[in-house]
Length: 211
Ligand code: ADP
Image 1 (tube, rainbow, N blue to C red):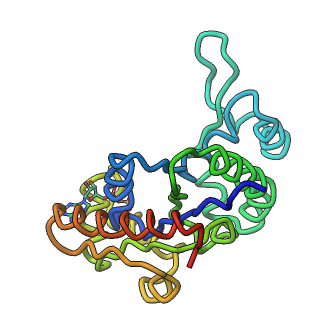
Image 2: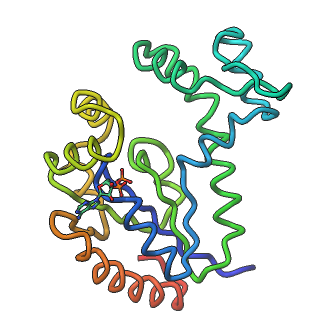
């Protein structure tokens, strides 16, 4: 049997610095599977889930097609519908979560680095944490999350706060972490923390142990 690969689950609230941390692991040659990207892939034109979404919500859930291509999902519209409707949210999640998890599992299995990372904003809010051996949380004070995320996105503070409401609290998230990267100060402070964890994860991977 092939040795079990070490998989680190990386999470954190919106604007906590997950993408910055991922970039630093990727620069070290670590394969990062991004759950947000996978979630988009499973509803691309041609994927069965898109047909099911279209049947359920009607053609108006699609955007206009460009150059005779299959019309893509209108993600903003879908987000708006499920934000205001828990039943529709539940319907969508029962359709997509198993597909997303299966695709994530395949990508993690195919990853060739000594250990790999599953990066997901909803690692702990969904069943995705079951796919990983160890949980790494990027932690930032809530006010900083709001400032950094609203600076990065077109979203205003109210939208960022609404997204934060759908995520675990800082305390709950940190309580479930095996490792925590503190991101309250200079961005350069991430480098040393990532380096230390990289050494630890290589060590754990070489012993083929997860905890
Ligand atoms: P996430 O992926 O968790 O939503 P990002 O990594 O995109 O968060 O970080 C949010 C924004 O804040 C980005 O524009 C990023 O460059 C910036 N940022 C992250 N950490 C810091 C920091 N320590 N100091 C200043 N800006 C930061």
